[in-house]
Length: 310
Image (cartoon, rainbow, N blue to C red):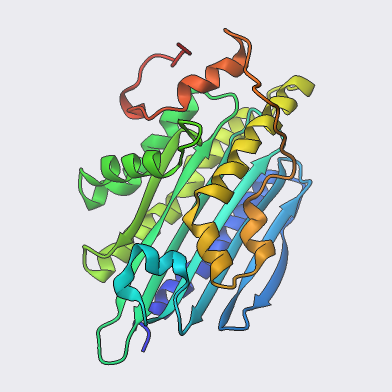
């Protein structure tokens, strides 16, 4: 039997998808999300919503999925071998937004709930999620705002929560083969069941509900910044790093593909354009070189001076 609170989590996630899409449509000011529903042969399905060629978003998606089955995929049992032989339910909302203007960061977030069942035993459950920011032309003002909102979302749950999940985000979203973070971080948590269920669920809601407060002011502040071909080429080059992380390191992508999820929805996170250039490096002192100073873990709440490349 699945966890008795599965339906309440699912109801919240569906409502979150609606509220995100409504607010992001208004923010875009030109495009609209199109919706597709899908079913998974092994059990479950989802509701995918994608926006393309909008006034702000070149591409984006806000996807809901609820998949279940009798056998966990290898990506789950490799990390948690004690779950072998259990059936599962995985329900979540994931969103990725790729603005056209290179001065508006790419942004990602997700919140999810997982249950593994076995006859005669208590269900094993946990929450996971978070959000992270990937700028191309970073701003200390934007980065500090992003982390202040994240810290406030964690504050009711203890003073150690934000530093813990901020550090986990820095570690998780590191391209180990490049020795750089994907962006300026945010929050990441997984396997969260150390508090009572209601507290864990409240924390998930606090994170999910704070996303728009974190992102919308940044997008509004930067969306009219002028840009040209140089900035777009740099954006495409750095989007290549985004692709590398998602295909090489991201556990959610691997779980989705191994569990028989809908490929189009899983790969919705990919940017519409990306490029790779052999041994390219920015000109020293250029605006593009500034990004490199941001791609290492830092205490953004207490950083007072603009990071500069070494």
